[in-house]
Length: 98
Ligand code: FES
Image (cartoon, rainbow, N blue to C red; front, side):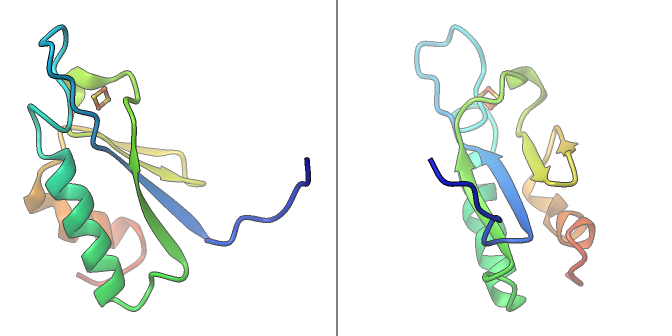
C-alpha cells in the first residue's frame, strides 16, 4: 500500500443506489439520485472545476429514507432530501457560482 494526497480538493458523493426489492426506499429508485449525479457532474464541468471537484456515484450511505443523499468531503457535509432544484445551492456550497 502507498499513501498519497487525493487528486481532487473535494469529492461529492451522490447516492445512486437502486434497491428494487422494495425492502427500503433508495436514492436511485425512489428519489432523484441518478439525475442529480448526472446534472451535478455536468454543472461542475461547466464551471471549469472538474479537475478540482470530483462528483462520483455512491452506493448506499445507509440514510436511505433521507434521500436523495449527497455527501461532500472533506467538508463532511451531508445534504439530505436533495432535489434537482437544489443544484444551484449545492454549487454554492462547493464555492461555485451557479
Ligand atoms: S439508497 Fe441512498 S442512502 Fe441508501
